[in-house]
Image 1 (cartoon, helix red, strand yellow):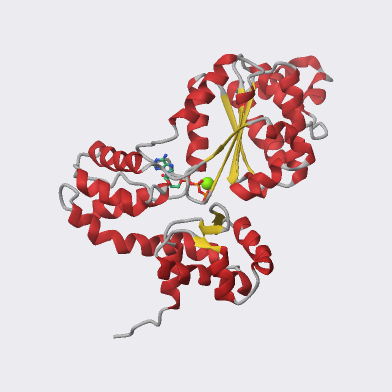
Image 2 (tube, protein in one colour; image 1 turned 90 degrees about the vertical axis):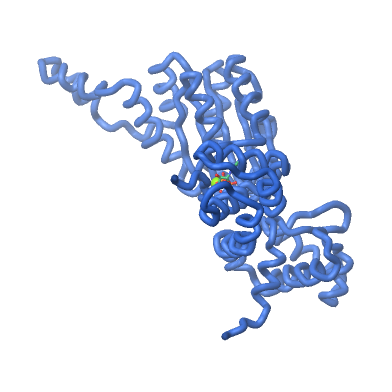
Length: 370
Ligand SMILES: Nc1ncnc2c1ncn2[C@@H]1O[C@H](COP(=O)(O)OP(=O)(O)OP(=O)(O)O)[C@@H](O)[C@H]1O
Ligand SMILES: [Mg+2]
């Protein structure tokens, strides 16, 4: 039987849990007609928390209601991508062969019309393209933008203007964006982003352990194998509700067990799961961290192992690093911006992803060579 778990970024899980409320609210907003403020949605959260997958669910919901979805990424020039490819392609898909048919008529003898219709116009503005698409359908258009933290302020403003133009005209339009927390918060502060501040904003956190447990059980059962309850509960605790880790632990435990997935199988893969999380998530995110910030993280990891607590006091850090707390606040904000740590209440910080502390501690251990 094929392993049903999907420890891959951007890959929709077989069983998707914990975010149904977001989907329901969006479905209602689409139904409610133009002007519903929840037709614009902003999703933020840490790496691997499930933003892309949620965006895909929103897209699927829109399609279920007959809407057309056009997608862009903040990593590439999104206005250009939308204007020059995504939207024209959608127009072509709903109106196949339109251009060709017109050309055909021209050949039949309508003279000058031909060049007028097929000549490339100066890049039409995004809003013009969107109007073309809206005119070709009798439903609506959802624009989705992933990795929005990497978008340029210019591009974002451009999209904001186009979107607001259409909303003002009561067009059937919706917009969903997803990105890393700090990047998204920065964009929300831009002067041109007023409309984004009015959007429905969801900050995604980890899944509840109950939700994690039931995804594990349902995913395995859906593929014909039992995930024993105590095993699933233990696995959920290992994952701390972090969605990527849910898929990873599930995947490894499925491979480990021959038949039903037992507690033994889960215990057997625990270490491997954390190791893989390290190479897949932690290592790349630490790659360009400058020495000052690295020291801070290592001090956090050290204090964590001594106190056994998930959160670390800024005062303890100041002592460990032999610097005044005020002198460390800049380093702290840079690490927050990198999505490596989060502020955890008054005077406390915590790692942004599970097992990052373990990863840092293991890196400093001398390798034993047999
Ligand atoms: N609600 C969920 N239930 C079960 N598994 C989930 C859920 N959401 C996400 N996952 C799983 O978690 C992993 C990460 O999801 P996703 O790629 O959406 O994260 P992300 O927040 O977009 O990460 P990044 O910031 O790196 O882009 C995937 O393997 C996905 O299948
Ligand atoms: Mg993503």
